[in-house]
Length: 150
Picture 1 (cartoon, one colour):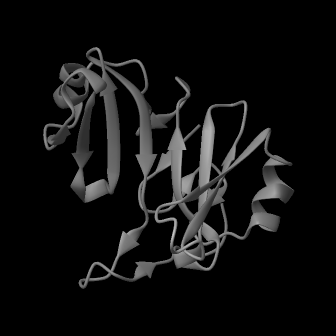
Picture 2 (tube, rainbow, N blue to C red; picture 1 turned 90 degrees about the vertical axis):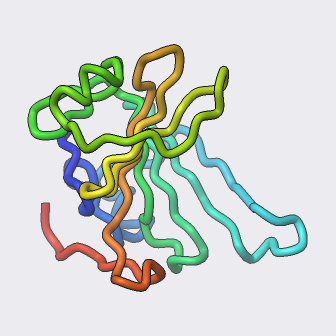
């Protein structure tokens, strides 16, 4: 699976509708619903989970378009480098700009590669997933949706 920074993974791109994703990968094996605040149920996300280790987040904030993609698969590659299963030291050797964003101690650490809009969740010293985010405008509030096509 090819990670395409600020665009998506493989043929799944930010800005796709649920129907577009379904036409490429089929019905997800699991669907989760997340509401951050009980008193604001209209602000929610629908997260599709696939057996290939992929999660696609469709947020109400973004009109339920694909706006975040997480991979737990050891087949996820960035520039032909596998990500999941590597140590953070191995990733830093290839991507020296990786920085620690949050340290949740025994629960894990969140590292980011800002210029690629990527986040790496590390637990027990190993990357367990990589999250791809779209590009945002200078205000940081508006997504710059990628163009069409794989």
